[in-house]
Amino acid sequence: MRRKIIAGNWKMNGSLANIAELMSGIKAGITEITKTEVAVCPSYVYLPQVNELIHGTQIKLGAQDLSDAAAGAYTGEVAGSMLNDFNCSYVIVGHSERRNNRGESNELVAAKFKAAQDASLIPVLCVGELIEEREAGITDEVVARQLDAVINLCGVEALKNSVVAYEPVWAIGTGKTATTEQAQEVHANIRAKIAALNPEVAEGLRIQYGGSMNASNAKELLSMPDIDGGLIGGASLKSADFLAILQAAEDVG
Image 1: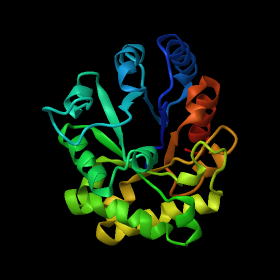
Image 2 (image 1 turned 90 degrees about the vertical axis):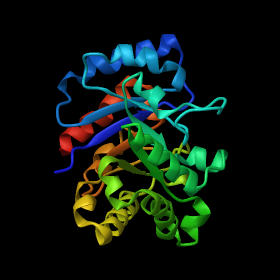
Image 3 (image 1 turned 120 degrees about the vertical axis):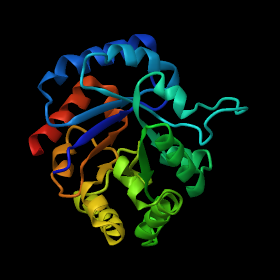
Image 4 (image 1 turned 90 degrees about the horizontal axis):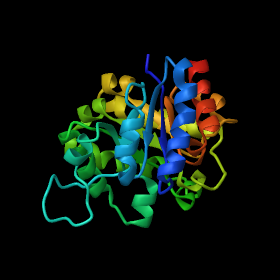
């Protein structure tokens, strides 16, 4: 049985003071979370602070991005080895805001996926479609291309040591969310695509939903057979909301 994973993506939010407050609230309520894996992904500059705050807890640390290069003359970039210094377990690659706002191609995302694994990090590979792509009925084709870039570079077995996050771009930060049926359909199609190449990898692959999961819709979404967790944006910035999502994951097992 796949263990649920709930990860908070704090995006470009936070300060020393409010992160301390947020983590205090999460730590106070997380003691009853036993079946669900928990991670938080702060901005680079707050990795040291959060690394200290989660010491001795079950909470895993993740980063929001990394360079496709291991080291060198890449001003402003952060290598996987640097994330290791702060005990990161996970790193997000290919988030829609990177793909669409920063022009990251499928090939660059695949290179970052490989760089993450080369640094012994677990990549959280984000895939998903724009609203015009959904309306054109090509969601599965778009997601397949995003997955294929990674599979072609790294091989399907590389997905064993990864998490995939499906994020319908039109449901991120908009307050909209895909229906439970829409989300489950795409998750099932992702698993079926991988299963056609390697059934064992597909069965073990954890696929998160990343489209505005919140305290009110989490339980219904997480009850779906192919939704194995959530990549949480805005709701991860309030400890009560994040804990409610964690509890929903616990309730559905």
